[in-house]
Length: 376
Length: 264
Ligand code: SF4
Image (cartoon, rainbow over all chains, first blue to last red; front, top):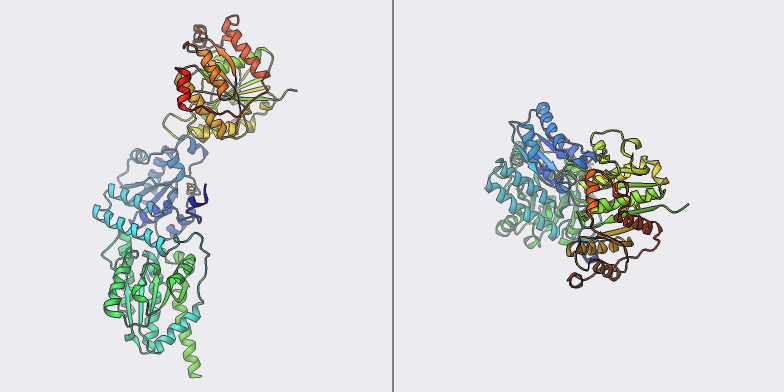
């Protein structure tokens, strides 16, 4: 292989896993991985915490040679008895796809009354969004989503891939992971800005369930602003439109909005659905140009690299991501501070309320310390 | 003690690899050599003429039934003590035969101790090398000599030429070409010329004789059923040539145009 041919150097998230997450967003109760017992185990466990069952047909060497039609149909019957599901997904793996396994025949053999989405996917795709796409197309074929929704998702997927290539983890050959800036220093800076009466934009542009944690940063900043008596200096944007997206994705938006409301936080601008993070940037840019161009600083959470810098040039931009490999690309874009929320994913699976973020907690603590120091 | 010969015979499907392999095995057994024949074709009929027309269980049959395979379950003695093994395969259109060969051969090496005592091991491999599994015997170092079987017709020669490319690619030398005649005009000359141009040599010219077919149909090798026939003599000579062969080359291959010219 010539050196120029090397286009991928980090293992990419696998298409098989992407398909699993998509099935979850479609609200399947069980996903069956048709392949080796160890395939995607870590995500399978995470998804179990998110309330869906992930099982495997555990093909062994024999299965690789002779195929696993029976193993799959037996597994279908078994999960049907065990979990009484309303919707089942079957996901291919490298092994079953290389040996030419057919997913629909075992489904027929099992003869269940439950709809089954068969996803013929393996891990050999450079863009893992391919796994999402195949899952959605299969869901459409099975009548679980409409053609319109499929088309909409396709647009989002293409954009998500572009975003990654433009400023994301797929933009550079090798990216050193980084923990980003120290949270308490940045917290101090944010609080001082608020104290000085500077105008603040919070922009939450979160990918699906990660919103449960990124929303907490919006909450923390608003709480502190209220304490400091400058609540009006903060404008909140968030992609929490609950009328858009796959069933589970709309649910997330509803839950997060409910929490915002309960905490008395106003979202001034809804910038899209929770699956629209790749395209929400345009609207954000437009809104800033029209209404908020005189703001002093912005705190962008979620997928900050999807927000174009054009209209943020005059602001101090602070961003919060959950990808350690995102830090340097964001600094390159001109963000003055980048913070990483570690372990975000495990903490946001299976929840239906906003969960505390490290940065949010730090802001709350630092403001207390600052007040105590002033009083002393 | 002589060095163990581990050979594979390649060639276009249907060109007569299995009958050549079993007749060579029988001829070598006649000479007192200890011979094993390992059929890697899912058809599993490499050894059938050494066993009086009987089929033996294949390694993959037993693996499929999840039987804990032992040597005596898969190695059968045929004509003059020739040890016969069949790899077998999945049902057509299901699973992966290539992986099957890899696993079966590993299994065989693991529990067949007698394999080391053989003077000659013949791997009868499928003609159409379609994936990595089919070259596994070579890649895993189980084969040290490769022969190509062809006739003087265009298509078998074309396949032979391709196999030469493949062998060169995986760095396996070719020990010779065997011509299994289809009674084409100037056949011996054509195949001899081909052998020379790719840098190898013609080991034998096996004439097309009805008797080979007849013996095969009855479930026997020519060596067993018609030992006095002229073609039995040809197999004997070929066996002798193989056992005494100690030269091999990385083959080159011919351009399509040259190949066509040769067979014109
Ligand atoms: S190679 Fe493919 S099938 Fe095997 S574990 Fe990895 S992703 Fe799964």
